[in-house]
Image 1 (cartoon, rainbow, N blue to C red):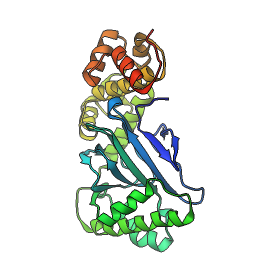
Image 2: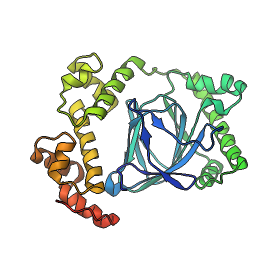
Image 3: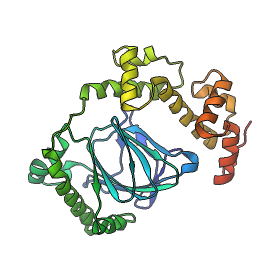
Image 4: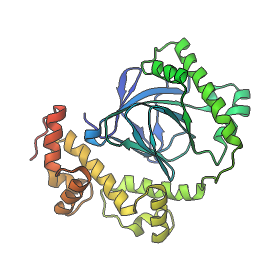
Length: 305
């Protein structure tokens, strides 16, 4: 099944990205008694692969193996390239997408329970409980790049799991000095409001939504709703809604044989002409041509009705 999400692999096996209704990502751990997740992601630029806005309970380290990603954490946007490791603290909203080429990445996710209490208290907690440290970009040394390369096809043995844990400890040492730096903390109240509105859009995108209806879910007004979307998503509420609808439509075009008009209605567009116009503006092709082109490219036999 073709998805607009990147293909994710854990222990060489593909798995589908999964999110709760609260936008939390569900991650596969290496073992039941080891809160560590190691997986790769393959982003195909031709299908505009992206990871939707989400968060997780784990600390995340992301390395771009090849290519580049546009990353957004809370209200900050930046590019991630192979010479940098991205650290993201738990409970931070983030999303990523390709820029101009196919991209391959490696993710390491872990909880503080991976370490003994002493390490948690004196090294992990100062990082995860620092309200000013949502994320950090760490330059990678040649030996670290070599270590990360060895994790791409990680052998499922305790010894190799230990190698990953040792690497993580090395990164924790690099992160620790950042806990002493002063910066503006993340506004948790604002993020909670934004969470509520995003969750509502993801659950009701097929309905006829207005900015007022979206704002109501966070017990706020239209102006603040718009301001929060501009701050944390760099777009307006309606543009975010339409982009989410278009992303769902893109999946349906590649995964089903539904007609363009049926797909338009299924994702919340009442006017077919408006749907086709927005789709063309976003992806450079009409929905029908997009389906035909990518069906040939990926060997999909979906036929437009």
